[in-house]
Length: 146
Figure 1 (cartoon, rainbow, N blue to C red):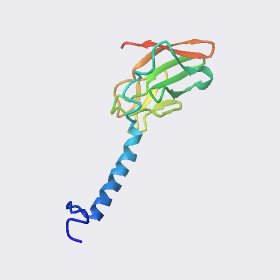
Figure 2 (figure 1 turned 90 degrees about the vertical axis):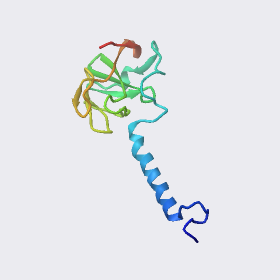
Figure 3 (figure 1 turned 60 degrees about the horizontal axis):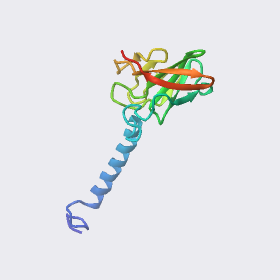
Figure 4 (figure 1 turned 90 degrees about the horizontal axis):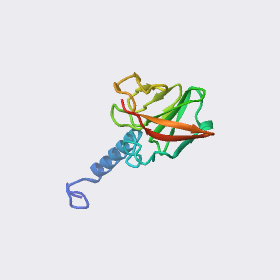
């Protein structure tokens, strides 16, 4: 086989396999930073719709809802908050909520009561949304302005 490889395209089989492996590894690594289906903001979270049930949101914690577009928290019993699940640092999708809201891409943490950053590199708060509760339904009402 010549330098052009079996296809005659100038790329050896070894180089092609290496490039394919690197591309696959990059795709896996970048998947933690969200995906195109989830998008950058909760546009498909229609205002006035139920986004979670109260029993799904632990006191002192929260959960990610609407295909990973929103984070719903309950800092204190009966006090529900909603934030964009898009980290303002690099646009990654937040995937974990415990005592704080965690962005796993670069380690930013946000307060579940305010959405303010507690640890960087993020310096801006998460976008906040007003919610209402009727029975066990948590309903998205509107985006809150700064």
